[in-house]
Image: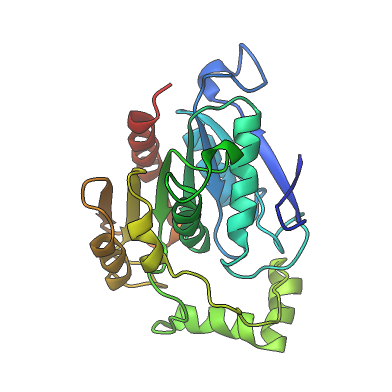
Amino acid sequence: MCLLTSDGVRIEAAHTPRRARNEAASGACADAPAIVLAHGFTGALDRPALRRAAAAFSQHADVITFSFRGHGGSGGRSTVGDREVEDLAAAVRWARALGHRRVATVGFSMGGSVVLRHAALHGPGAHDERTGAHPDTAVSVSAPARWYYRGTASMRRVHWAITRPGGRLVARFGLGTRIHPEDWDPVPLSPTEAVPLIAPTPLLLVHGDRDPYFPLDHPRMLSAAADPATAELWIEPGFGHAENAAGPELLGRIGEWIAARIPA
């Protein structure tokens, strides 16, 4: 499926039916919930880690996967979390066009920051829900709390890939990711600035204590900024970073958390 964002970028997307009804129908069920997955930087809808996550979440709901701009078969170039909010909004609108009245968003790393900003910019009170782009609940896994973080070796490598011509060439030809060469102007709302705007939408923050990209001050900053009445923080022992490190047990618990908030 090809989606078109509000700023004219073509985005590849796919629909995975909920496993419990696969034998009965292949299309979307009008009253079934949907989970929209937002991958991390250099990911795509056909990468094994995202496909594994989609299979796990399909135990609980229909699943929409897509590739962010500049990734996989999507058009455009990556803005590393800025304009990607429009990509996620297009995927959520598609889920609702398929008949899903309740939609959860789940993002990993860069996708986790996009989920936070999307929920703030398209949530109740911040956006007209008639557009269909709003989430009913949001989950952010392994997300940064602030921009321009270079405090780990992993993030210094990411910044080299984003900011240097040679790094962008490596990202394009080695990782299949096309990065926009221009700096942000203006700098987008940071994840920590976005989090207070998400309530009353339920929010789950998930982070590993062995994350090589973002240490634990990031999820703690996000949690401190969130509404305690509607947000939860899980610090996962032994968990690394994003979809590549997320195992069946963690994905299953996240799926159960979502199912309790947007039941079938």
